[in-house]
Length: 171
Image 1 (tube, rainbow, N blue to C red):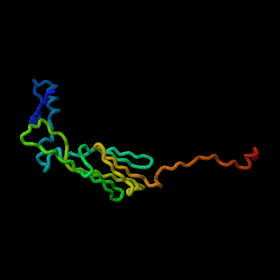
Image 2: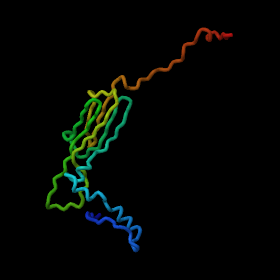
Image 3: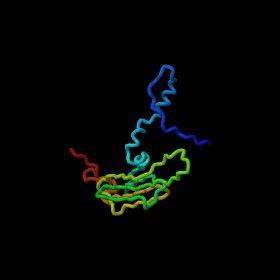
Image 4: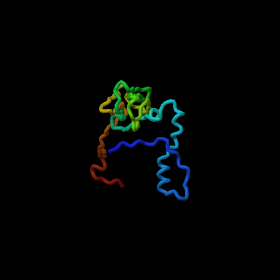
């Protein structure tokens, strides 16, 4: 497979001409990035600004579980904290050093700082929360307090009454 350079400074489509093929106009419109001109306004590169890991959040019977993909990050790069009932996960993913004499055909991986906060309902036990980073996946488990965990209540048949037990009929 050959590596193909992307042409970064493509002009925006200016409109249809009578001899333009409809598919070529559509292709030009799909390749146009209307936000490309805004990138110099940011103090950091667009890749750094856009770094925000995705989270899966689920509730089980006894805990809330948060999972995030953090490839290439180590435990020292991630901070997990509680303030009241708010869980905050933050960190920083460093950009790899680039050598000036090397030719880059594409630089698409994101890097930079991130912070995500989640407000949890009452009844969580923040003191027993755990966080683990394994194979690039962060898992934060926040147990529920015993009072908020589901509790099975046995269903019993009502005790028979004296009149119905003997089969008498009220008149």
